[in-house]
Structures are given as structure tokens and as C-alpha cells.
Length: 547
Image 1: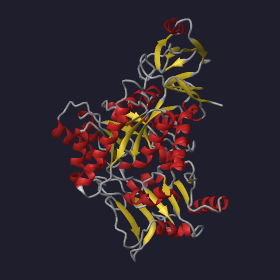
Image 2: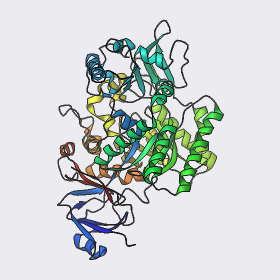
Image 3: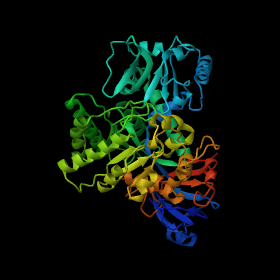
Image 4: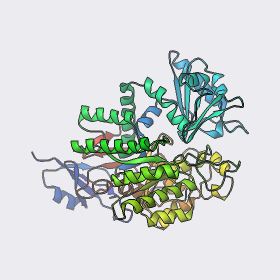
């Protein structure tokens, strides 16, 4: 059977490399790019029987690869009460009141993306009483914007079985009052682990499947044609496998990093690596290109906003945080994962955590040898020392960063808790570029908006996509348009070790393409905020068309 061929002409075609020349046409045969070049050359390569699509001068680029995704979590968040724009506890309470009135039969209410800046002056942590004032009869769970802490009411504490006898998990804290009772604020693994059994237990498979549907649809409309899921769990991979069984494919390819928890038991920690290997091999045996387990994810520390990121020097209030994974616990797990051929992805926001991440890679090299083709990656890198950046270059460690985390509209608390020069040295994108550390740009949705064009706007300007009146955060560090586009496409493919088939509009690559109504290389940067995706191709097929 002859594969269909389609020629796309009259376009501005960016092939994914920052320094590559632009083209005007590309051809797709089956699920691959056949040719790229001038209209005439591409038509000739495709042959006289090829279908022709005139793109009317639109901009075509490789589909964005979301370098740091949480698919099920992102889809779930879209159905929660949205709190990112609330500037006071009173506004949050009003949103919750409205949500309850709109759904009086609700058994729980969930919200997402509240900011510490919404708390009253002098108050650093929220309390259950603040929610109880408006909803006290059903559980309420409110995820912070960074998803590293959860604010709950008294009913939620009861439902999850959290009381004065509940022990803090490794790397987490149930905040307590002077009497030892939980206040309604859970940090890090206390939020992630202590609430998981209850929340996972009340979700049906149909609900989780629906969350994935929402995530895929939103990403495709944003021009995203692939994702690295950085928090794969049993529940989320089961949902993806159900989708594969049903459709024989996913809406776009997903590479998964298995979530590792520091349990305090070395054997249990290593067993998590064994599970990742088992899943990798099971999926590989099916031959599917749509879902692959490629690595493991360490959460080495927390976040700066909550003062849980591990820093070399204390925060402005004198506090500091230890890494969630100790060096002693993490090292054998990293070595085992590396030996098994799994990519190391390490969440490290504080400068002490990123230094530890490099140490773990060095330990893998010493134990397993150099030159093994490993492509370790550090996620976030919001506060990092120059010497750590240089060490990353020396050891081939990539930087996976999220410009939307640097939106000036959400930086006030971030800067205040650091309180010194570190607040001005954050998000040093240029440091990585200057020494040729591989860079991938993603969004980490739902910790930030998922729209790829908004993410690129911040990367290219340092300005806010939320409030245009705010001064930019160190615009001299920004990416050029070509650098930003490359980091979101070919760069993300390289960092994800899928650059042999994804991330470029080039012959032989999968035909994953986003067509835009603006040209980011020539249009004013602010046009990215109003620009739209016209067409998204995944493996050569139209996966989204603008209505």
C-alpha cells in the first residue's frame, strides 16, 4: 500500500536548529518528513501525485516537546478551583464559597495554584481555620502553585487520617501548632505521600482517564506534540496503558520517568528502580513508539517559595532545608538506575541540591564508567552556583528549565524569602548557554500555565505573561527567538534522548509539526501572547486544527 504524501507550501519553516536556514515548504510521507526546502524542490521530491496544502505564509516549526510534564496531574488540575490570580485569603475563600454553591452535592473540593503572596502580611503559612470559615463539612484540598505543599481544612485532615500521632515522612512536614496538632498545612512529601492514599482511593479509572484526555487536548491545541512525564506513578501509567490498549496509540508520544520516593529502607528504594526496569522492558517488548519508560525522577529538594529548597546558605528568616534524598540514600539508587540504562532526572531548585545532583552523576561515572551514552538532566535550577553549571558541562548534564516559573508576577515571595544577592542571581539561563550546557525548555504544568507560546514569550523577554505593567526580571539573560524555539524543540529532544527521530522538520524525522499564525523570529515578542496554533501534526496526521 502506497503511503500518502502531502506537500505543505507557502510557509516559513523553522527546522528546529537555532542556526539553520529557513525554508518555505516541507513534505510528509506517511508519518515522516520526506523533504524540506523551496516550494519547487519539495514538490519535485514529493512527486506529481502528492496532495498540496497552501499554508498562506504561516510559520511552521517542529511540534513543541514538553520537556517537563505531569500529564494526569495537569488534566486533573483543569477541573479544580483555580486560585493563581487570587491576591488575598478573602478572594480564595470567595472562590471556594462559589465552588460549593455551584456543586452542593460535592463530596470534596479541590483547588490549585494558590500563591504565598495571597497570605496576609506577616503570615507565612495558611491554616485549616481559614478554609473552615467557609467550608467545614467536607474535605478541601488546595495545592500550592508549585504543587510542593497542600493547604487543607479540618475535614480533610480527618478524612486522610492525619492527627497528632501522624509521623512526618522523610523529606516532609505536617505543620503543627504549639499543642502538636496539625494546622492544615503539609509540606513536600507530607503533601505528596500522606494525602495520596485517600485521594487516589476516591478517584475512579474513568476520572483518571478523563484527566489524561483533558491534558492531551490542551497540549495539542498549544502545539505540543510530545512530552516527558516527570512523575510517572502506577495510577498514571495504568491510565496510559488503557489508552494504548483501546486506541493502539496515544495522542502524542510520551516518555516516562518513574517517580522515586525516599522510603528510609534501602531495599525498598532499590525496588523502585527494579519496577521502572520492569515497566520499561514490558513496553519495549510491545514495540510501541507511543509510551516508553526512559528514566527515573529524584525529588532532591523542595521549592524556594516555601523555604524547602536545599540552599548552601540559609533563607532570609534564618531557616534552611535538608535535601529530601540524603546523599547516602540517593547514591546507590542512582548507580543502580544508571547501570540499568535509565536516565537520571533530578529535581533540584536550591543551589545545594543541584550540587548534590552533579555529585550523583559523578558517583555513577565512578561506579559504571564514563562514555556510556547517559544523558542525565537536572530539572528547574532556579538557584545554582556558577561552579555547578561548569561541572554540569564537564559531566554532560543537561539543564531542563521552565521560563514560566520566572514570570515577574509570581516572584515577589520567591525573592523575599531569599533576601540577598541570590534573589537577583536566580534563573541564570545565560550561564548555561555560555558554557554550552544542553538546554530544554518546558512548563511543568500545572505548576505554571501550559501554553507553549507564553512560555516562549517569557524566555525571550523576561517579562510577565500575566501582568504587562511589571518590569522584566533580568531581560539581559533572555533567549533569542531562535534559541528559545530550538530549546523547546530540538533541545528538548536531545535532552530527552529522542533526537534521532523528533524535534526537527528534517528528512526522516517523525512529522510532528506546529503551524502558527505568527512568526516568532520576526514578530514583536509580545505577539506571542495573542498568537495561535493553526494546525498540529502528530506522526503526519492532523491532531488539532484551530476552529
